[in-house]
Image (cartoon, rainbow, N blue to C red):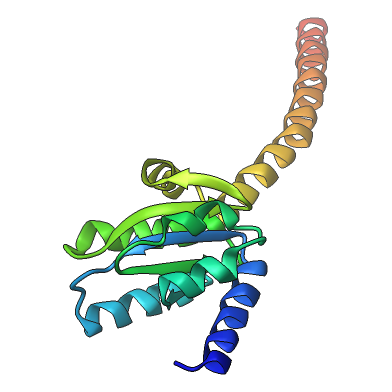
Length: 172
């Protein structure tokens, strides 16, 4: 790799990391190409991408950026997964893949500049996704007016039952 190619690679990594909310370092030593391709497809489906880069280039690219907290953890064979959309979806995809693969392991991560260990990434993967959280919020917001209408209806219903009982009593 000459200097221009290295500079282009650094800029590519820097640009990808700058627009990503989550960056995860993973170990892929001994992983077959077919398995790596499956991982890349799975990450693309969850709104992320997987980059395999030289450690020194990655350190230089992440220096001074949002995910600078993980730059010193690049050692041996490692890949960096970057997620632009839902960080939980990316963490879940990586965690699921790590459970099924013998050669892939999640090491470290950075969520909007905050360091995450492998255990913290696993905990992040167990959280509900963005869509599920939005659905729960909307359900909660919808429950308030629904319960209010039910309360008013029950109050009126009680008055109607009382009036009906008085009518039946007077009719008899």
